[in-house]
Amino acid sequence: MRNTILICLSLATSSLSAEMIGDVEYHLPNQGKGWKLEKQISDTPKQVGETVIYLPENATTDDSKEFFGVNVNKYTVDLNDNAAIQKGIQDQFPDQKVTINMLDKNSESILFEWTVTENGKEQLHGWTRAFSVPKETVMLTYLTDQIDTIKDVSPRWIETLKQAKKVQK
Image (cartoon, rainbow, N blue to C red):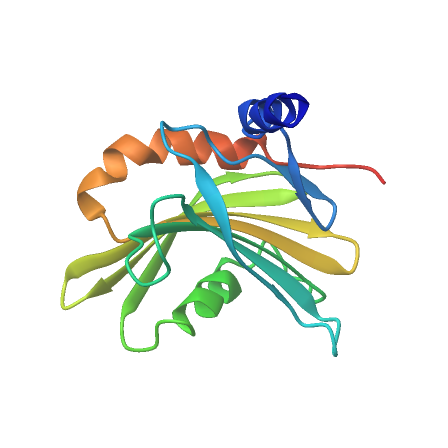
């Protein structure tokens, strides 16, 4: 019985607990569906970075239409260089057109929306918050190919990304 209570308490509070990557604390949104840790990739030999990927709990890597990913890496990004940021995303989609739209910028982070189009049709839509912390960059990204849901999910993900914050260690 005690184990059952502990499991129930853990599940009930899991959406309230914060996750950490690098010096950034973030939460996954509670949107009527849970999120599961799908993959954690660490570049251990080079110690360059770490990536964590979450999927909706009822999805698999093969069929998921959306994901939330966080990355910390030892490369610093100039958060004031929009062209370099766009090029970084464009390099991931070389045969498609990438556009970015800055939504918010302050001394420690930027928040931007971005799209990937092919033949004039939007294929992917994402929101990214990037933090510049000493000697590394932390990026949190939500990405979907469900273009018809963008108006519904946009406020939730923008708010989720805005709630992420740098913490002092």
